[in-house]
Length: 110
Image (cartoon, rainbow, N blue to C red; front, side, top):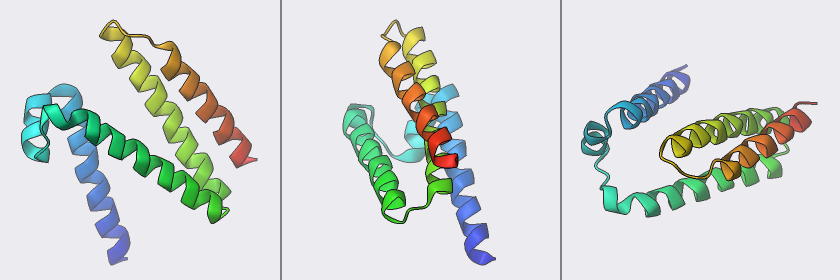
């Protein structure tokens, strides 16, 4: 019970930071102690972390958890496409990642 509660508290803190980065990046940088110039390296670390989660779930053969991870990846790809598109960037790579994640989510859920 306590482990579930602590896990949900961490998820809530991450969600608050996520929303802050979307609506008030200056405040989010201050709260997270990240520096804007370090953002590429921070993103690199996040991508490596996500890859490690997927590899771990494959090794554990936890297909329902992989379906969830890929469903979340679908949402991330779509959000990235919207945000990058608003900034005038190319959305096709993000839409491609979202489509691949969606296909894998469905395949893992079967």
